[in-house]
Length: 464
Image: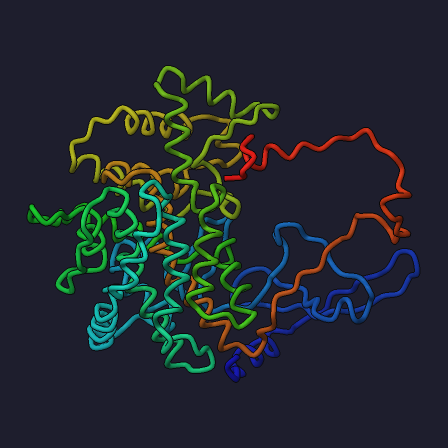
């Protein structure tokens, strides 16, 4: 791993202001632990020496009360509905700039000057094409393969093609890997889509903006000139910005954990894509459309609203509420307006989209959802927009991954430069058997329990 800078270490030293006392009620022994204060947000108890001093460690499933690192990149206040990237409010960025501007900001800490912007965009454009042999890699997948499965494989394979970007001790190679990943993700994602349709792979165009190029890669065909609709390109740009980073979520934490072992950046991002694929994370906007399909018609909305309120019913109203936000998701507020702009621009009269708008209206006026602070989140509106843009639902998470790539690589880069970086190794609360004596198979007690292995191969004895 690279020799780290001392910037994080000095920041932590300056952040220590008070202490927290832990007392063992059984023995009466007490220990003091320092509390750390970030620039904004709640104070944090520094428990790094907890186990060595006390012989105990904390239990926190899902890490909801645990800070795994320090970071300068993104700040979230879920109660107030605040999301800042390097101090800039997400709605200011989404409304006033483009995706590569935000990429530069997340990677370098400041918005680019005009000269920096031109240089950065040119650098990204230089890496948008895929190696010809990598493009042939797609033919090894079934046409029906989920595009996220293809993304995991192709992104992981990048390390086999770009050996000049895998030395994590070299700052230049780290930045080159960052640029390559940001540049190639739209091409990789679009080719997964094109492959499923049996259509030829278009080449990227360096004349277009990042979002325009993404739409062209997805929807252009050789027989027709593809015209960029500025309203749709703006919506795509906002979706990418709003998904660029979101602090220590599951996929970003996965990238950091993989990177903590000194894995190469392409492998780390492939791991992040796999984590994002889950329906509780990046697959949530796809789940919104599946839910709308289940509700089916407007006259059934009240029934499903009641099901969502029933604690004994497993039905969940997808696209409402958030693990972090207990207020209106600031990203959703931006996309709500964009959603209506896109639908108006396209003049779409899709029963599913009409159903979504009616569900939004009813939920926002429902006392239960107000009391529980279950507001529509970014997944609700992004799913509607992407359906309106004619993306199939299995491509929704791919687009999320394209937008989130810069956040993953910014966090990976930050970790590589941190003096605190250690290989991730969570502890556990063991609840299994205590030590037992081994018994040979001939001397073990008889049991009537029978195990059938036929489910492994679906009843086919050849296991195919």
